[in-house]
Image (cartoon, rainbow, N blue to C red; front, side, top):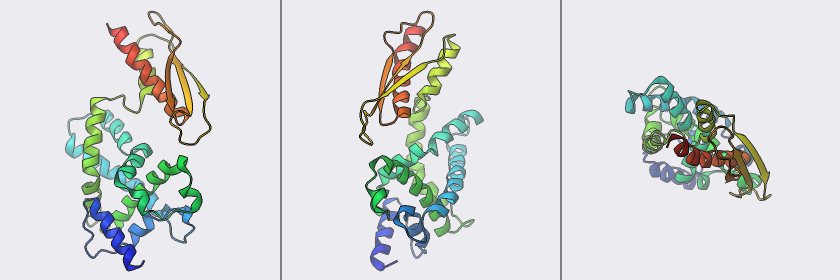
Length: 244
């Protein structure tokens, strides 16, 4: 690693509110080297370690900041705080892509950018754990970096428990209301990768007192995201109508 790259890593870590001092930054460079770059050392080893680091740190965060939450709610909240979606959003906010070593195919794959961000954020957590000394405060930089992000996300998720999990919420609601299972119908409307309107999904809920009205519609860049948006639209209409 040359002096210029070293300075780039120092500046990046400082942007995360971390002060590397004289620490060996080789693990950080390894974490930011995606397999697509074709280098002998890449992010995969540290991604494996980072997965365990992330879950442990998230558990500690929840015990410290939300000690009164039940185990079930803590587990559900943690699942959101360690998800690939959350990691991809974290990477976008922190500008991790500008620091990555990527191969040309990965650089041009817009649809795969979120996955790359999530993978390398997880690897970076493993890199921080190693650089700060495993067992000697290795979780300290992880908490320092992630706690402000987790605080914001936790507040949003606790205020809206169905957030990002509207399909499950809709199914639970229809079952509790004595209605049939929701029926999803999707169609591909575009073949452009990462197009937010690539898929259109309609969800229909049938049952006593439920007006179908052609179903409830959602759009997304994947079938899964379109289904989630359709479920969210259905919940927003059906729950208030049923409870009034």
